[in-house]
Length: 552
Ligand code: ADP
Image (cartoon, rainbow, N blue to C red; front, side, top):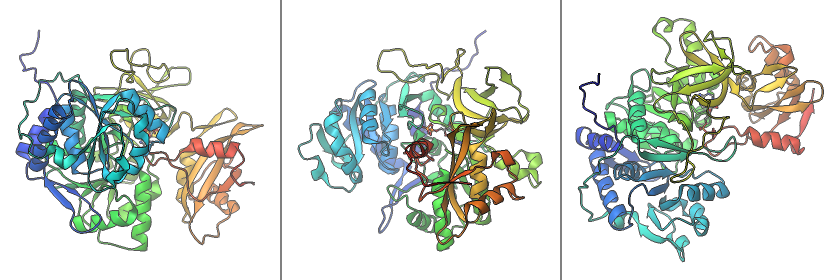
């Protein structure tokens, strides 16, 4: 028997219309670096999105599922593009401006982007690539920047404000099948070539509802969210869409992502929530320690993208900013788990232990663990295996070009269609995920696994260590052994013997056989385009003898 319910498609268009009408007074505030920030209501941004859609169609000839790329910071214009492009039926492709040039060219050509909307401040990065972007016909420039960099460019160049000015303020939005592509984003290539993940209208809609649930971020129109996680990194974790559903105000940092301006915008704009990867928070912590500011408005901080070191969580707790840890990946839209402790643990000794896990799966995300031989492992909090997930906002394949079968590599998708995450961990009986490593980062020493993440967290809890990355290096006797690379605080006199003793001591209790014997001081941990530790680079530096390594 079929239901008697209406079959209304779940679309980004609907989110836009709702945000404009019901939450029209909510604000997008974009930091400008000097003077007053730019302030724009959802109603204004929505109207401008309509005008942008008209311009893209009537002036630039965007039709059907043409790809319109953005090469932009987090700002109000980027939000306008986020809604205009999918609502008109086209596909938003957020280009990761931190990708190496050759990967950017590869990604834009692979997606066959027809238009690129770019922030003027990013023209020095984009302009040199344009001759190689074979499908791009139009470049639309928004915000301050040197336009002369585009002199002689092959694609036609437009000014964003001129392009949308005087356009009609209505658009006859097309009926969209909710399973159609709305946006695409390539993985950052930490583990090989970038792969295209294509989000549907339906997946974005459902994911936005999950982000808004009280046991996820749970924000309301009384909140202001400082969206530090880039809009080119998995849709800024879904925040622009989720906020238009609930009227949460957005504070956008544009290009001012350094610790000092972030601290300044928190003090002056008083956001209640913020979202970013651990590296950003580590930097902000240093800034706030050196120059205390009134950050009392900021009571909730979502951290994900890499494991949140417990020491960082504690430090932020002390400042009154409560960290909520979450796990996800481009392929999971990204919200996969979020660590809100269960009711029975609140106020008990268990609470912190729950908060430092990667978190609990929401109802729509099914999870299972796969052992080394492919066997299913129990949810007992002890059996560690590769995490596999499935659900309505989890990728089932990668984009492989128009009208061709999508890619389903066997190392990324199981035969029965689950996503193999490449992350290794345990799941407790009550559904909390604890990641011990990425499959390729785990250190296989004499038949046993050593978690690089555990060693890093332990090292980073040492008062003299600002950053630490541990990688597997080849070892004649054990197969692999850990190499600890550490960044020390200025003026620190800690030596490797004392760091090793610290790991073995009461504070960390790392088993003796897991203690690294190879150590190296580095100036900074190399980072990927989205601010994660780039262990590929460290392994290469070690292999090529570029690190100054001490063996204890
Ligand atoms: P890439 O795979 O190119 O780095 P993603 O941003 O999609 O790009 O990264 C997803 C990966 O980031 C996950 O598979 C996981 O390894 C890691 N990750 C994300 N969140 C967390 C977290 N809270 N703890 C540990 N690892 C995390």
